[in-house]
Amino acid sequence: MSTDPSGVSRVPVPWNRTIPRSRLFDALSLLLPAGEAFVIETLEQWRAQVGDSLATPMQAEVDRLIREERAHQRAHRRYNQALIAETPVATAAALRASRAADELADLSLPMKMALTVAFEHLTTVLSREILGRPYLLPDDGSRHSRMWRWHAQEELAHSHVAMEAAALCGIGHGRRALALCLATACLSFDVLCCWSALCRCDTAAGASRLSLLVDACSFVLRGLPSLARMGLGWCRGFVPTAGAARRGAK
Image 1 (cartoon, rainbow, N blue to C red):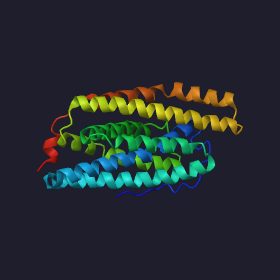
Image 2 (image 1 turned 180 degrees about the vertical axis):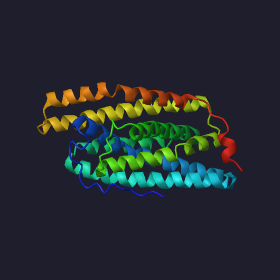
Image 3 (image 1 turned 135 degrees about the horizontal axis):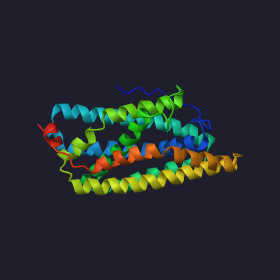
Image 4 (image 1 turned 30 degrees about the vertical axis):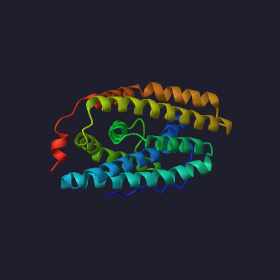
């Protein structure tokens, strides 16, 4: 059962050791509600289409994923409201993400299912790194850390569901590979743009440009092992799967 532990009412900077570290997770949070809405709407559309042909265990798994994604969405919306109240420039990133998700609504269901698998795979790769290594996000007991770790734990727990649903939908390996490339390119660009905008806002508010640049370079360089592990995890998204459709069908 989803239980949001965040209760985040303020987003102080830095809350994750340094400004660049903090702003990276802030940027991710601004984009997540729109992505979660897309995943929820796509799975609900697919579930309505397949109807009673879906096996009861798979129905329960899809219901759980949707329920948990709604809880994540609520938590990040509260987080983002606090972030926007203290850093108004963040509004533009959240609106841009919402508009991008709205544009995806016109795609075919198979393509939306492939993108859902891609989005879930990307969050799974990041979640595994967050929980497995303390570098990106220390387990310091803060509300911000607890929220992100709670989110990551639930992402890992339901990480298989979207893939199994896509297999039942008949999504081929080629379409999934294309969707993963597109999702990765778009999300990486949006995160970097948002991260940069938030950091520029901090320098405008008085943060030292030199200190911020040093912290950012140190974060990237020391984070190369994390990037390598996540890169390997990302590559696993191109591996063909078998048997998922048989597990989900009656």
